[in-house]
Amino acid sequence: MIKFTLMKKIYYQKIACTGLLVIIFFVFQKYTSKDIEDFSDVKFILKSSVNVSLSEFNPNDLNEKQWEKLGFSNQQVKTILNYKTVVGGEFISKEQFKKCFAVSPEKFSELNSYILLPEINKDAKSHHFEGSDKKSIHISITFNPDHYLLNDWIKLGFSERQAEAILKYKNYLGGSFVSKEKFKECFIINDDNYRKLAPFLILPEKTPVHFKRKAENFNAVKKTINSHFDPNILDLQGWQKLGFSEGQAKVIIHYRDRNLKGSFKNLEDIQKCFVISEKKFNELKPYIILNSATFTKNKEAYKAEIKQEKTNFSETDLNSIHFRQLLEFGLDEKSAGSIIGFRKKLGGFVTKEQILETYNIDKDWVGKLISVCPLNTSGIEKYTLADAPEEWLKNHPYFKYSADKIIFYRISYPEDKKIWKFLKLKPEYEARMKLYLK
View 1 (cartoon, helix red, strand yellow):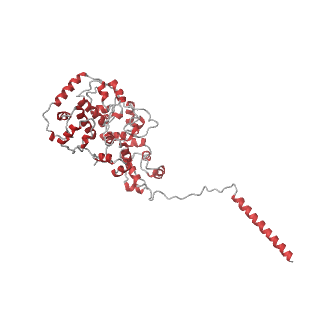
View 2 (cartoon, one colour):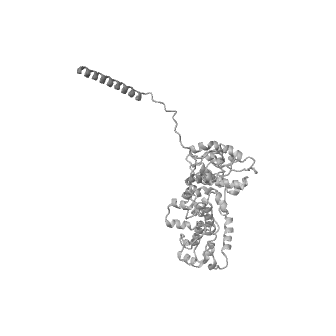
View 3 (cartoon, one colour):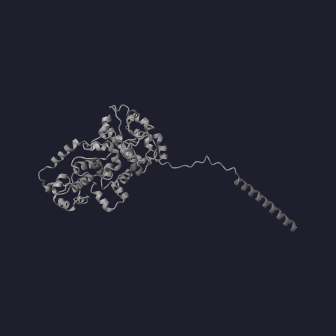
């Protein structure tokens, strides 16, 4: 009996083990099967970056708070508003708005259907200028638009406001239109005006492949000279049209009128001017005409100018003292020319000590000069880092080496305190720069 019971127990144990093995087999088979379950319909719910209900809007009408309500950070809002200023004060199309680097592709996709703007620049231009061109464009000669100043654009038929916008766009590109393609992208130049101007533009058809809107590419387009000129009768604008900056043009005129007593006598005189590079001189050389008739005329004018009554130096302002007065005081031409040239570059002296920093001067005589003459600083132009003109920054002796950094940082951080923080300058450099800041 005991033996039978034991056998029965063993039998049930075998059945239980067999059943357990069967269950394990089917479970293993299911989870190692190649028929993987399809999760394609599973969706994850993400919180929207916009916490308010969207409705149609014009991005030109929004203030800072309204941009923030659309989900942009304070810094992104500043960048958007700065970008709007750069492109002329308003967005003219969705295409243009999308290019703002503070607007990500995902964010643009989210807002796209609510934006009340034309889709592309082409549509915007025709709408923007419909019925607004009171003057027609007149052009009959080829020209390089990089050389054109405000009055030149007005003479073509643009309004003063339009001319200012064109120049602002050129500065945005880095000081050159670069190509006909880039010129056409200027929102002021509508399609009809571009068709009129295109045949006369001295610009490459296509934008260089590696073009970037950086300072080193500002001169990507060669300044073109297409007529002869007499360097002894050129004024400030004349030199600028040859491709020189306003600051460089002033130096050339000063060098001619003061150091050379009114005239370039030969090509070597021109070549010696330090702001005219060898490359630029070779470009100008075939077009230079030196008319000897102007030599005598300019020399007589110079002599008449230098004849004067005795100067009372105790009442002569160091920021307005003339070259001839410096000679009268006892300085040599080299010292006098250096002081006048350095003063022009600075836009005026703020302290008397700056005069002693001038290169190539007789410091003993200059020391006597500054001890006698007063210094009036009321006429000196001063700016903040955030609003200083780009050309002023790039030409001023104290700012030019930091100009590109200042221009870059102030796009996103238009506050002097933050710009200083990023510049990380030596205290002595910062102190010099602050002499010309508000």
